[in-house]
Length: 470
Image (tube, rainbow, N blue to C red):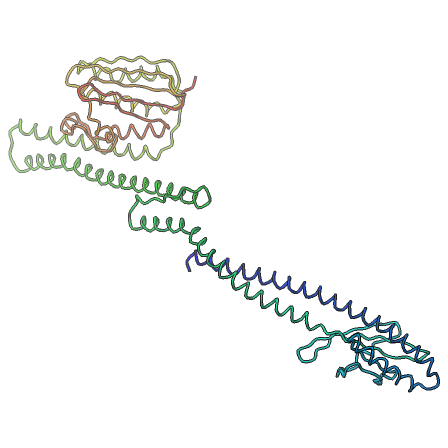
């Protein structure tokens, strides 16, 4: 069942139960009030009738002192005249409950008289066909003779009134259900429409349309649900995009790795086959062996770089407090002889400070970046290393005067096996893993590595460390 129908039927059922109970209580309360009023009036009427009959019988008894039958006859005669004038219905019985007089022939039993004493006035409700009566009874004493007086009050009207009220209320309730049903249906559609929009958007997403969004501008719970849904979709789209990129990088990694293995292996197998199959002069033998040695060394370097990258992602770092100027002087001592051969000058200008780092790994980063700057130059050039405190941390800038890179290449240079100039990199013994390892080292230090480059003007690498201590 749709949620809108659930809202609709829930509202109708709640209204039906509430109005039914409320109407029943109201009509019953009105009936009880009228019922109690009629009982009170019946008792008062019986009391007045008791006083009136007692006075009448006392007067008649004085005139017929020696003959009770004459007194009763006179009373009946006077009572008939009285009843005709006042329209009162009652019944009189002697002390043995034998009927003496009835203003109207009432075929009701006399069970009520069994519970009547001299100081008790009782009543009961009698039903005859479609009429209801209050039977009120009391005992009266005239000249030491006891009599039973019963009066009958017709209360059919209050029962008819209650029945009419129920009929009116049923019709009113039916009308209210119809009106409320129409309003509830409209409201349920209005309330559930945003949910349907969310559902349709979710269905589109399951079909692969990650651009589906929900446009709801309300500030209520459904509006916040739509906002959270859109945020979830944005996050999902981003994650899927990242997974696609990761999958693509993985495919590229496997392809690049296979290609990097294939090239040296082809050379090794080819020159080994030449040595195995032919008698070569000493120069050709040395040349073939030299090719095999160089390609074997390149395979070894590739394996070590891969191992280093894998280990880097798993090992725990032991950080030490290292002085920045001292760290860069050590790097200068390692890299300067290599730069001198290429007629490349190295300038270092850094401000004092201390970093919490793993020094050997950060040396690897600095040496790799400087070495890449060297490889980007044709002959003489200059590499500048600057360092200063910034944004609560410390930044190291390594700038070279090499060829630079295109903007679209900057986002990929930290990918494994990616090389801007593959033939040049292989000639210089590169495998495309250096910057990937450097990027992983910076991530493990909660830092980052940014690149800024322009073709023909060189490249600047920014290494940022979050923690700089005094």
